[in-house]
Length: 92
Image (cartoon, rainbow, N blue to C red):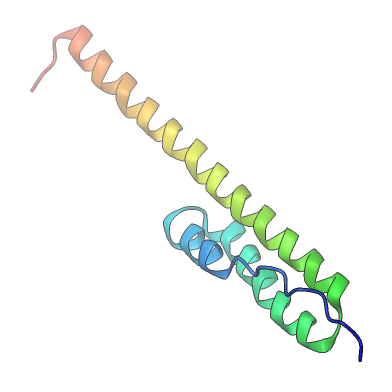
C-alpha cells in the first residue's frame, strides 16, 4: 500500500481572519487557495495540495501586510492633521 504524505496545512482560519480584519481582495484569494488544499489532497494530487497551501499562506501574509501598511498611512494622516491643528492653534 502506498504511503500518503502528510496533509499540508490549509491556513483557512488565517485566511478568514485576514479577510475580515484586513484586506478583502487578497484575503479572498487566500480563502480560495486554502479550500483547494483539502480538495487536491483528497484527490491524490499531493504536489498541487502543497502548492495551494503555500499560496494560501503567501496571500494571507500579503493581505496582512497591505492592511498594516494602510493602517500606518491612515494613522500618519490623522497624526499630521492633529499636529497641524495644534501648530496653527485651531482647536475648535
